[in-house]
Length: 58
Length: 240
Image (cartoon, rainbow over all chains, first blue to last red; front, side, top):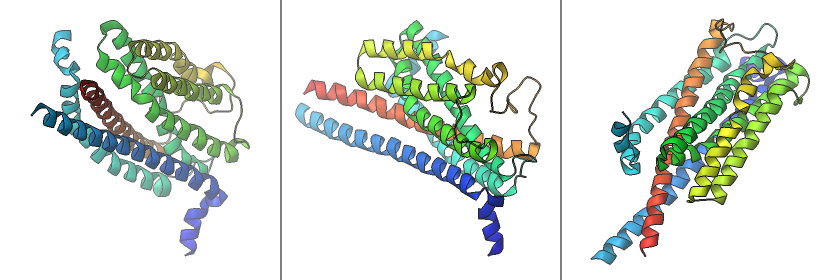
């Protein structure tokens, strides 16, 4: 338990180190989600339009 | 040579080509980042001056490199667009700023969190920090131009010209620590006389940077595919 505490405490600099890693992680996850959700939404719209146009041509 | 490249300038073909590359980038990036994080946080040694705070370097420096590399990429694609007028070049360039601005933001925030225990302050208006903040504003400007002139040739030209003008900031960022007296430390990895950083710190930094670079490429390639699909939507919608 005390070893775990030492790892997180980082000689008194834990707040700065873990905050930096936290910000890095959260921003990357948000970026990842934004990129993937945009792709999903565009693919949904494209699929709908392709189906609609195919039906129109028939 | 240029004629051979013409066939790849077709957005549909390009989208198919980058599909496997994109997946390789993601599946290589994730383990590399995980390894880099574990070594950087738990196995690399503390710095003799900065102590444990040096661990912030693994995310700060890798993000800073990506922010600069992304701008060089935008600059080159804009120049190619203005020379050869392939719309695919500017389409690719326009997908970079949103991803790059997040890496720039990460660089500024993590740098600030590293600055407090090292320099005693979160922020100083010194050359390196200020020029990096200007890079953030240039990325914002490029995003605004893209949003304001969506699907417009004038917008493509404005985007390219702004990115070329803004490129002057890149050497300023790189050499700011040599040209002016700054609180920021001088380059210790990318320098003419070779890296001065300890090998035990250099290895996790390189692993982390490679992982983040591959993740950056994955995000850019996914965005490019989305942009190509968006153009198809516009075309299909105009048919209705």
